[in-house]
Image 1 (spheres, rainbow, N blue to C red):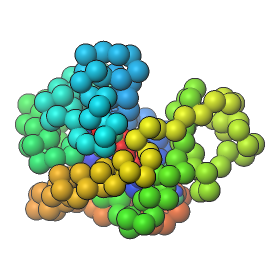
Image 2: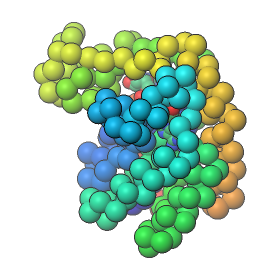
Image 3: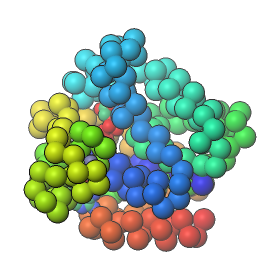
Length: 216
Ligand code: ADP
Ligand code: ADP
Ligand code: ZN
């Protein structure tokens, strides 16, 4: 199974990707996570990406295309993968096509998680993750069972992303509408687009995705 999760920032792509990883045993390929790891590691890519990410703009196509192409060659991608947050521009979508063709991989479908803008701001504003295992939480929607303790690993330290502040979120939403939303038409025309209602609660969104995958 080779999936793309498409949707605006805060739609729930990462949340659903984590569930699909557990269900299907295929890796999540999140360019956002990979870029944040590069920034923390202080690598050359990280140094180039940091300011752009902090401002809420998109990192250059060349950088992310190279990261994904390399990642797809890892053995754990042989049985399938979930692309989360990539492709994000038409140039990246074309590059994805060529990459997959040259690696003899065929895309199963593109799942579009649809969410209204007002809700996105709330989802992003309340988002935090476990510093130890990366599990995702939300101040209102997804609280750990014991306050301040990660359900998955017992960790007690949590992170908030520097680009999750309201000023930056506006720029990220604009980038989504300007550069990423054209991909909806692009994949619709290829017969690959499968929209799901991302306004529903997390389990209900997962159920819709399960249904899409059952009908592939
Ligand atoms: P979100 O989950 O909120 O959509 P991501 O974690 O996917 O955000 O991305 C965070 C930031 O990383 C983006 O704002 C952008 O600067 C950069 N980024 C991630 N993926 C891409 C990509 N495919 N192309 C360009 N920039 C990207
Ligand atoms: P994305 O990867 O698309 O940027 P996330 O998966 O990080 O989005 O979700 C953004 C925030 O919203 C997180 O705090 C997450 O816990 C929460 N969230 C995700 N899906 C839902 C949902 N269906 N209903 C309510 N909150 C959600
Ligand atoms: Zn944890």
